[in-house]
Image (cartoon, rainbow over all chains, first blue to last red; front, side):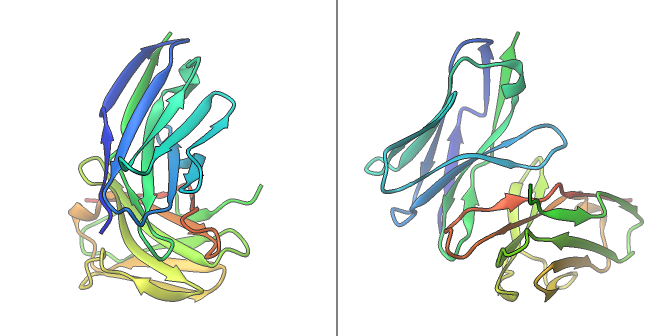
Length: 111
Length: 114
């Protein structure tokens, strides 16, 4: 089955700087790659996603890039703010509408 | 703003007791997922329904866990008997078959088994 790995496990950035989280996946058949943000005690929230027919997608301060050849995709957060502090999960479709999730990255934005 | 709802939000129970968690998927969604989240294991898929039919429950301990969808607006996850190792946050998520992979999570049920 699909295996998704995230790096680094924890990322600290100064407010205003950019943060980048990278995920790798194993199944070349995966065609959908969402990112979820989970604040402490809250539900994972879908913040951005990308399908395999595009290489990049942007929504205000967040963007996702996909490299199908290398089987990795990344989340980019620009001009980070304290409210961006959370755990971010990447996932890859693994057939039959299922998702395989990474273990999550803790992002800490230092004011 | 349509959202997945779950009840109860918190549950504390003693070992051996039955626990039932409920989920109302977003109206019109036809896929429902149950996940368990712990610090050690992250998000684990327990069960998956499509058009109310169970498609995959391989992640669930069969001897004590059961998942059902009595109708399109209700999914249930039961643990009987509960054990301390079942303590976790249980999330329900829903989506559409045609929107491959898109899933929206409920607020979760935080279960503590003492």
